Image 1 (cartoon, helix red, strand yellow):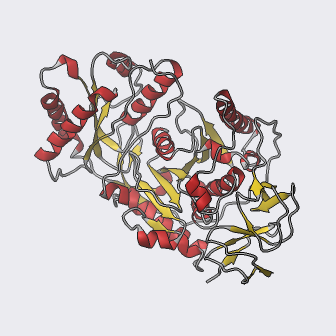
Image 2 (image 1 turned 90 degrees about the vertical axis):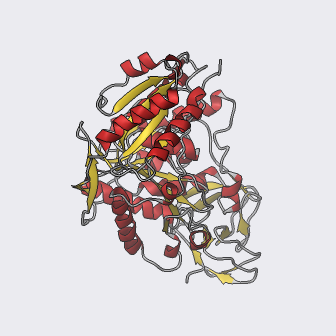
Image 3 (image 1 turned 180 degrees about the vertical axis):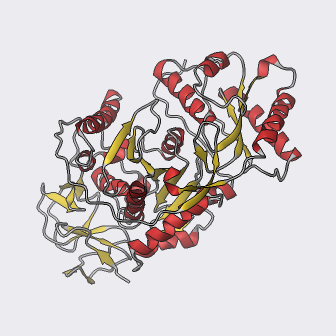
Length: 492
């Protein structure tokens, strides 16, 4: 097993794939101190103020002279990031995609022509005031149908919003919930309101767009004597329709897959994220769709994405995406580089550039075909970028609301979290996969132990196809299903 890796020939650092001891020889240098797994050490002398290179790109500036074999981390390196920038379009030649064997998935066809990978009943509260009632309605239905045949379960997704919000903040909450109501993984949905919230049911319904009226019910709690009984009866009505749905075979290109990382470590950009990038290229090659979000974790790697824009219009959208999020930070008097998290740093990630260059490995090498902002839905096959923060729960909610059927979620530190669509957790290291089988669906850590990317790509594509065809993810087995709506406005 390799104990170190130099990712790019131009790199001035190498990364430990296993704990290293002071005095050991690694990558042709003698280590001056112990190096933890995932952490970096210098391959050449780096003078104070000089650029530190990893992934063949700048990940920061040396705060002091760094000797060969010395540990490089927050004590001797800092970010090189600035605020909003001017960018120019330099279209990169995208390599011809490899020829891949497509796969068949078994999915549900919806009345509007979309497909879903689950056939679930959902209760969606329009306001947090009825969260308890939503849970009680679901519990009541599940007690009556402990093993409901023909559906993949009955769930609610509670949240604290829907009232005391104004402007864009209120509109974002409404749109996210409306997208959930129309999501093809749902075979029937009950929209539950209170009756006095500013996310009014009449406006919610009028602006809902093209929804399946046969599979959508609405209930205002203040207008009935017993909202639990009424809600349960409406779920029974929806169940009678949904339980007759059957899976049909379709090509894997029908899937829309979200790409996300959280609790990253020093191996994220070496194992799991590049593997997911190869999967994204696979989906692009067979005509499918992938979506990358976490805009703050593009800072420092944004030019690489811009150079892959399919045309100047798409390039302009990426510039707007990146600078718009930097302006959001600056509006709140926050530095654009307030990242990585303490857990990231403990895992070996030093600066936001370091994190971003690893994070964007999930995008692969194919061209960026479109950029989505608030209120946009997926329309383009291939790789898309989506506006939103890096927060795990918000990002996965955004991806699913944009239309993703599932999310591939890479992690080096681990998390039990799952969204309202299947959330496939991919570990960056084997130790995490062994220690947390109740969190992790797939181990990419064995790439650091000698397995090839090609072999693991085949295995990951098989897992995605099986998940789309009904195999439960770990988050589904343990009922880890949550949403979080991005809030940017005042609370009244």
